[in-house]
Length: 123
Image 1 (cartoon, rainbow, N blue to C red):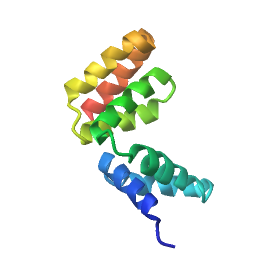
Image 2 (cartoon, one colour):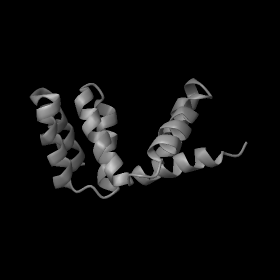
Image 3 (spheres, rainbow, N blue to C red):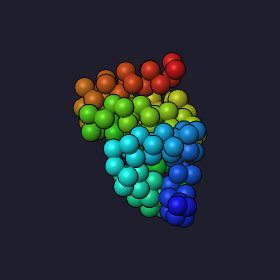
Image 4 (spheres, rainbow, N blue to C red):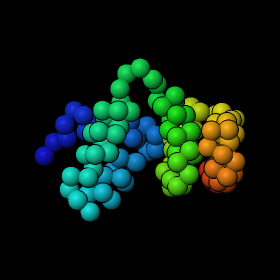
């Protein structure tokens, strides 16, 4: 069955963040349930991230900040830090996002994000 336009749009955005991300994520989710991939491709990326109004760089900066404030999403934070770099966020901008979150998420969240930042930059 062919992908819908929304699915294709979502996958395109995912692959801009990281080459091959769409297939990696959808294949892993489909192993668990056939309907799960659409939640990510169609809803999260196609319908929300793919909306007009903000460019992908801005959206990734917001996503990184949000994931830092959660404090319990290290794998997603690492992925989105790499994605942010892939869509034009500089290393310095990324570091400034992490530092800024010390005010809003607390120093422990900032320190954890700094650890992930170092891993991403050194990779």
